[in-house]
Image 1 (cartoon, rainbow, N blue to C red):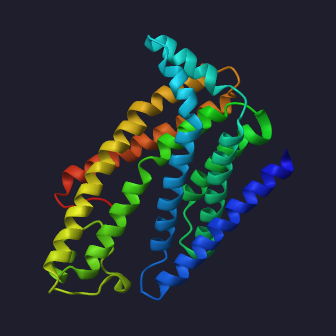
Image 2 (image 1 turned 60 degrees about the vertical axis):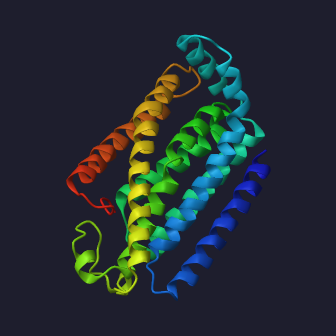
Length: 274
């Protein structure tokens, strides 16, 4: 069992090391910061993680949907959440654990050290590996939480990339009016005032991604998140420390949602958040 876990984890670890290395090398020649590579790899991880998680949960969600009342739904969800970890759920958990390990290492070695970032990734890795190495159960619950948390990330990172690509082609007067993006970074500025179509397209796409991200973030973190925390507290096999970790992620999500809302309605610009 441990040999299979180690081999699967090692394969995903190698894949994300290669992806990080190739993208960082390729983008460095285009005078783009290393965060481009980190965000592109994050989009890749979120997309694959959501697809794998949806596949792993499909059968259990159909079983839960067969119940009528809300109480029956929650009871069925709790029963499926505390079942033994399936092979597919194990792949989902190891895939994301490998990504967070590589991303954490890349940040510590190449990027600016961030304590909150480190705590987030260490907590994520611990939560992902706990069902496999310690309990052998509750894989469905952790996979459900992973799906909710990762669902909005592609939009978030796509918006950031579009904003920074817009800054590369926007006129200086337009880019300077954006007060939440570090336009003073010379690597981001390649002024091309004769590209109005490209500039307007990037601004429109950034605006769409920003608002779509805000709506999906609100639904995932403020609506679905509390339901999963409720299920965790009412599932006997979930230890209290994991429930408290879920509460910590929920509180952090609400603080982040407040920050995003404040920025969105304070800045009337598609680059309303960085």
